[in-house]
Length: 203
Image (cartoon, rainbow, N blue to C red; front, side):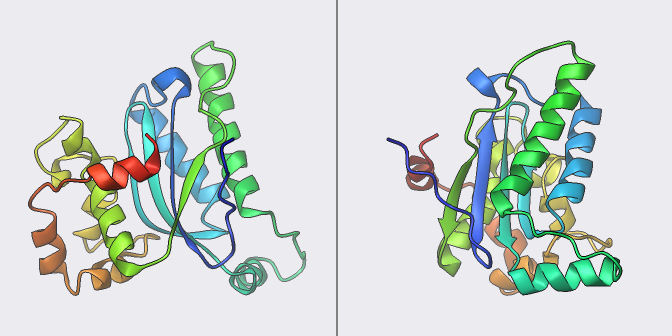
């Protein structure tokens, strides 16, 4: 029996999933953009994002679920008149995936589940593991033969990390995990053996 890791407030998680039966979930550029827009709506209020990568038939996210206190403060800063109910983190992700599935089903005249269920998640409980997951997420397109370096792939957080443009990604914190930007780039200049990490993900 599969044990489902709960999403607890204040913890870091690697969240990942793929299309049902490995079906394509991002068919064209506007699909990636729509997913990210929905992500901002459903996930940004309850989680900080540290890394992400959207592939044709799967995705990877590295997030820190905000504490209840952080969520309340954010709600109050946006709306001081209405006290909203705090949604359980797993429900927020479920709402994201359901909203995206409905859009794809409607737009491409398909039916049924788009993603495998339940979505997968792994608790990240130390800095070394966190660094490895960041690199693994950014190197996913290289691993699948799409490009030679993460900087060449447009649908991941790597480009945001090496940019100076305004972003909701926790870029400064991500860079600090690698000490500085130069070291971040250096550690991303060569592929690594992520077989041990992948084995733990049960991909």
